[in-house]
Image 1: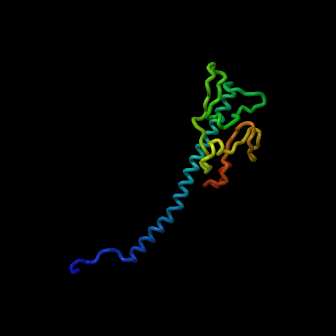
Image 2: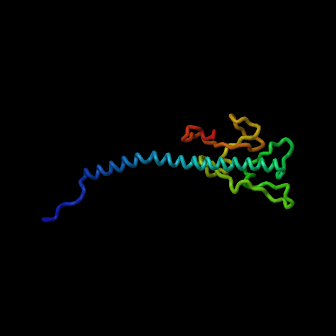
Image 3: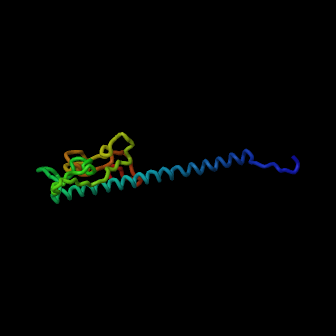
Length: 159
C-alpha cells in the first residue's frame, strides 16, 4: 500500500507494557491487603467498644435496681445475648424490657458464618483473672478468639 504508513504496536512494545502493568499490580496488592486489614480492625474496635459499653450499662442498671440481682451474683449479664434480647425491668409496673444493644455484633475476624454472633466472641467471667480469661456464670468482658496479630503488633485476643 503506497502512501499509508503502517500503524500498530510492535511485539516488544506490547511485552514492555504488560510488564509495567504487572509491576504496578504487584506493588498495589500489599497496599490493598493492609487497607482491608485496617478496615476489619476498625470494625473490630467498634464492636468491642459497643459490647463493652453495653455490659457496663447493664451493670449500672443492676446497681440502680432496675434488673434483678440474686445473692452471690456479680451484677453482670449471665449471657451475651441478654444485651440484645432484653431483660425485664423490675421497676416498671408493666414489666417492660431493657435493651442494651440493637443487635449483637459479630467478631469480624471469625470467618465461620454458621456461628451465632455471641459464639464468635471469647467471654471472660467476673471471677476469672485478666491474664487467663475463662467463661463462667456471667460475662464481665469479651475478647477475640482469633490467633491473629493486629497492625499495631498486639494479638487481637488482648485488645
